[in-house]
Amino acid sequence: MAEKLRPLIAGNWKMNGLTPSLMELGVMIAGAGIASADLLVCPPATLIAAASAAARASGTRVAIGGQDCHASPSGAHTGDVSAEMLKDAGASAVIVGHSERRADHGETDAVVQAKAQAVWRAGLIAIVCVGETQAERDGGKARDVVGRQLAGSLPSGASAANLVVAYEPVWAIGTGRTPTNPEIEEIHGFIRAQLVKTLKDQGARVRILYGGSVKPSNAAEILKLPDVNGALVGGASLKASDFLAIAAACS
Ligand code: PGA
Image 1 (cartoon, rainbow, N blue to C red):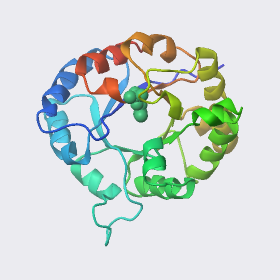
Image 2 (cartoon, rainbow, N blue to C red):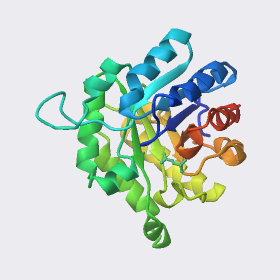
Image 3 (cartoon, rainbow, N blue to C red):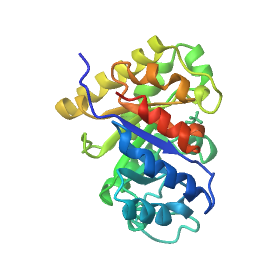
Image 4 (cartoon, rainbow, N blue to C red):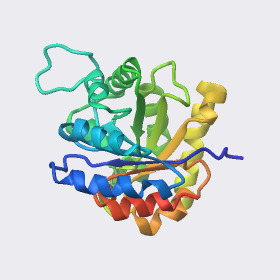
């Protein structure tokens, strides 16, 4: 029987958001009190400091996170941002291994593992993303791919306090398509089993988020599936009303 964990609804703004978007964040912050979930918003790096300041000033439960980091704490890496810098700007969590990073920047499991380690070095929570492509799913390889990504991307030392896993089938991201509920349940159960195998009791308590075209209209049915402990939301996290509606679907 899957354990009931406090859900986490995380918004990934991706490369979207200018200073006026902080108004939208303000609406999310104002509405966060009604949600029975932890809320996290990951704006672009340029907005993290201002977003954190706004969240802190309101005393809200909305946490602010980064979308990626470099594995090193500092150094000659032009244009990169370290986990320590994200923490300094007010982030409490960092997404690593998003499929867009894996695809656009050639990030391997080893790179993602080093980044997750860096997130922990800075004292932040790592949200490690895994998920298969359409071709891999069609070839019956979804479990193999996700199992391999988990084994290769998670550093040792993971716990329910420092790790969140996000299952995001690549073919469902930004497409409006989602797996069927039995498909989500099946792969989340598989991820849970892998986590328990390697992390024992802690593995039973690591939150596993579903990501890929989550919206207000499908959130409730996805969020009630066993071993779905929240959602990683892209497009629908840009609008406060949609993001809050998804958060309100947690009960
Ligand atoms: P989407 O993106 O909700 O727009 O499909 C999800 C993600 O990439 O985290």
